[in-house]
Length: 272
Ligand SMILES: NC(=O)c1ccc[n+]([C@@H]2O[C@H](COP(=O)([O-])OP(=O)(O)OC[C@H]3O[C@@H](n4cnc5c(N)ncnc54)[C@H](OP(=O)(O)O)[C@@H]3O)[C@@H](O)[C@H]2O)c1
View: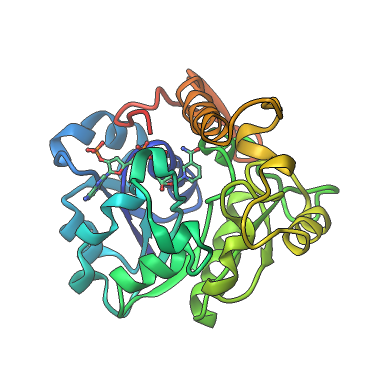
C-alpha cells in the first residue's frame, strides 16, 4: 500500500485525500494547527487515514503532496521530504502570498520555488488548475469521451509518471507540459487555468499561453470580469472567485469518483 503524505489539509489537501483513500492509498495528512484539529476529516476519510504533524506526514510518505499557501513553502519539512516525489499544487496569489518579484517578472515558476525550498525532492506539478470541489466530481473512467484532462510538469520522470497514474486513478487524463520551468503555462491567468478541458483542449491552451499573463484575455479564475476593471481589482476578483467557489462547495453528500457516493462535510478544511 502506498502512503500519501499530504501537507496542507484545506480545500485541495482534503480533496486529494478523498480521492487517494477511494483509490486504495493510505493517507497521513497535516495542517499548521496540529493533528487534533483534523479529527473530523480523518473520521470521514476512514481507517486508511490519520492526522499528523507536517514532519510526521513527510516522514511517513512514500509520495507527498504539498498543498499549502505559497508563502508557507519555506516552512516545509525539507529533510523528511528528501529523495521523495512531491506533488506541488501551489499557485501564486500576491493578494495572499505577497509580491514575489521573480514570479511577477516571469523569471521563475511556482514549482521551481517549491523545488528550491525542497532541493532534494522530486517535484511535479499537480491539481493546480482545477477548483478543489471538482477533484471529486469531475473524474471519469479512462476512455470516457471528452474526459477532463489535467496538466503536470516536472524534471523527474518518476514524479511525472506518478502524477499521470494518480490522475488516471482520480479520473483524469494527463497532459505533460514539460519541465518545471515550463509549468507557468498552467499557472494562474493562463488559458488552461481552472477551466474544464479535455486533453486536446488543454494541449491547445498550454501552447497559446503567454509567459506573462495578458489581463485582456484572462480566463478561468476571473473569467467574466469586466475589461473596465483595473488590473489589481481583476486580480482581487479572481482570487475571491476561487475562494468563494471552494467555500461554496458544501457537498453535504458528494457524488463523484465515478458515481460512488460518500458523506462529506469538508470538516477540517478552512477557506483558502
Ligand atoms: N482552493 C482551490 O480550489 C485551489 C485550486 C488549485 C490550487 N490551489 C492552490 O493549492 C494550495 C492550497 O490551496 P487550498 O485552497 O487548499 O488552501 P487552504 O484551504 O487555505 O488550505 C491550506 C492548508 O495548508 C495548511 N498549512 C499552511 N501552512 C502550513 C505549514 N507550514 N505546515 C503545514 N500545513 C500548513 C493550512 O493549515 P491550517 O488551516 O491549520 O493553517 C491548511 O490546511 C494553494 O497554493 C492554492 O493556491 C487551490
